[in-house]
Amino acid sequence: MVAKSKAPFMNFPRGAVLFLGWMLALRVNAGEPPPRPETHTYKTVGPLAIKADVYRPGPGPAPRPVVVYMHGGSLINGGRAKLEKPPRLLDQYVAAGFIVVSIDYRLAPETKLPQLVGDIEDAFRWVREKGPRLFGADPQRIAAAGASAGGYLALVAGVRVRPRPFAIVAESSYGDLVGPWQQQASTSPKHQRVPLSEAEAWQLVSGPPIANAADRAGDGGAFNAFLRTHGQWPKAISGWDPKTEIEKYVPYMPVRNVSRDYPPTMLIHGQNDSDVPVELPEMMAAEFKRHGVEHQLIVIPGGEHGYAGAERALIEAAQQKAIAFLRAHLAR
Image (cartoon, rainbow, N blue to C red; front, side):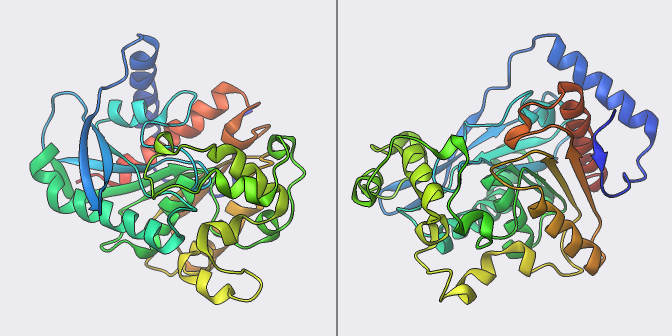
């Protein structure tokens, strides 16, 4: 059985897809070490340097297309080196000839949603303006990608970044910030950690602004678990009460901002995702269809958040389709 696609796969030559998959398999199976990044500071806010790791492919013609990658972590945790497995899509993107720019961004709740999204906008601007000189980027061929909260930010880039990315790949993602899945208390075992009082939880994130969870003194994972078990995530990341200030969220919710000019988008999601319900990408797909936006939704049978529990072959097939999708839309 292959991964279920809720939209027909693009008209990409079958032979090219098979050849690409074969080449990727050769690289992964040969045990080649992952590419080593070069680190740049793309933005400074006061004393805080916000950084990006740039992964370059091997020798080839320049300039090259770029995938700007945003990590997951509920907008609270993670960092530019935290890239999802297995296998890392980053390695496959680089093997396919893309420059990958994996970015940090300021994390909530120390920094609130508008400023966090501002970092994403500035990162794309930096890639477009500085990337050609620093690492051979093609400013006319830039895509957005990410998983979980990073997938959300990739979808946000399709709304707020100008010029828009040429394509988007969003895994385990969401376009809504204030639905029942986030406002209602979670009963998922993954969120049932050591009980904390509200004061204890907020003490964990009481330090200065950070752009990488490795720099936080407290336990952001425990803080996020507290938020999910109490339905407080939307307010914590934004500072807004979703019951009385819903209009403030709207500019940051991709599902409410799709237009016919939105970039071509591929959504990949686990069918059994208990963290981000599959109804979330289905909502995005419905909006894309309503506005005539080119899109695909691949639902991976048996997949939890991050595809845990799914067959590896199904995960790899979906990821190879993602690469083919980007290659088609970033071609000269």
